Image (cartoon, rainbow, N blue to C red; front, top):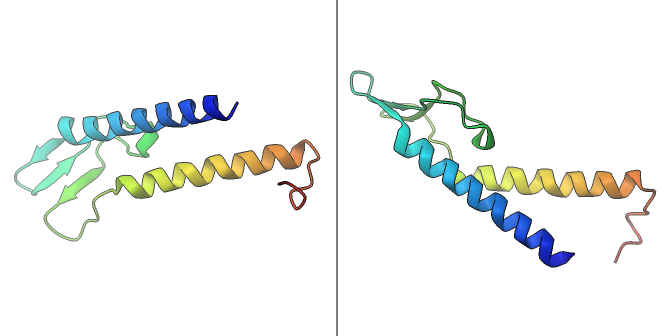
Length: 94
C-alpha cells in the first residue's frame, strides 16, 4: 500500500511539473505592459486565464514550491480527516 501511495504521489507531482512547464511555455508576452499572462486555466496551479505570471513591476511571480507545499498540506489534512471520520484516535497512531 505504501508503494502505491508513493507512485500516486510521484505521478501527481509529475503532472504538476508538466502544467508548470506549460504555463511558462504557453504564456502570452504583453510587450506594452511588460507582463507574461496565462493563456488558459491551469487548475492544478490555481491559475486562471489572464493571470499575470510575470511582470516588470510590483508583481510576485508564482512559486512552484509554494504550490507543491499547498498540495502536500491538503493531502495531509484529508488523510487526518479520513482517519478521524473512521473513528481513529489520532493521538494513539504509531
